[in-house]
Length: 293
Image 1 (cartoon, rainbow, N blue to C red):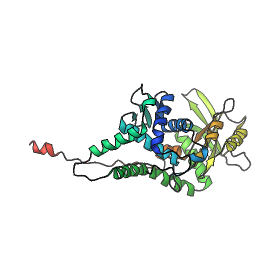
Image 2 (cartoon, one colour):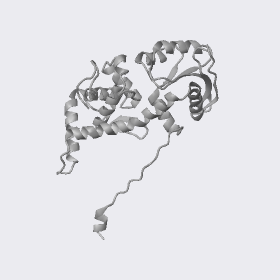
Image 3 (cartoon, rainbow, N blue to C red):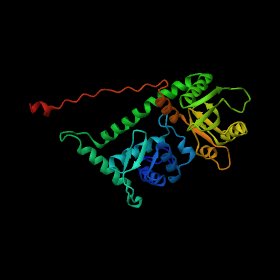
Image 4 (cartoon, rainbow, N blue to C red):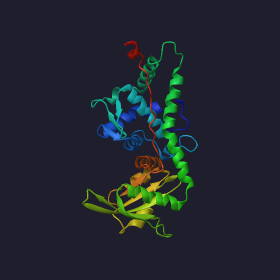
């Protein structure tokens, strides 16, 4: 990845390394990717305009989030981060002094470590190693880009039915798609029961487009749900601006949960709705075993 800033204010991946550690510390030592990224946005003072720059022409993630994936990868290779199969990232040490962290040194150490793993006769350059890491991250997001493009092509009513199915598979009941014109953007409703004891009426809205949901749209939706539900849910194939996220959780206002395109892809994968995960068998020959016969 080029270290040159493509846009004014767009940080390079190595400049996000220390803010990432700070973010996880503020979260108590661990956090999901979404929680960590949102923290980093504030710590690094990244504007909404910069956050909306996509990775690639029609990337499933923003350029900032893509670079943050690089930052986490380098921190993991450096030994400061660990991640679980459930997507939670954890600091490997509780007493990390961020004032002593040098992102340049971290990058240099990781690259030198990777070079040591190569056979002595190898002439692979640091640029080649960097390219391989780039491809690894690209492949991790490629399926999401494909899935979002599929979702862009289905009809609005099909997307509403998909949202209905997701909620049902997630434990909601009495889920209905209304989609009435002039209903304040409300596309459906349902009930979710927590621990078999408490029930909450939820109204949801579906936004199938590539742009970002704004705070005014969140306010309009909240106005439509007043007196009709306990909680609101907005599902989009796009993203939410930072101000929209703040508006959704504003003190004193009915809470609204947000599902953006990336979370939507992860949820479809988790529920196996139109997404199939295949495990590829890896065969390794142990030469030393045969030599010991």
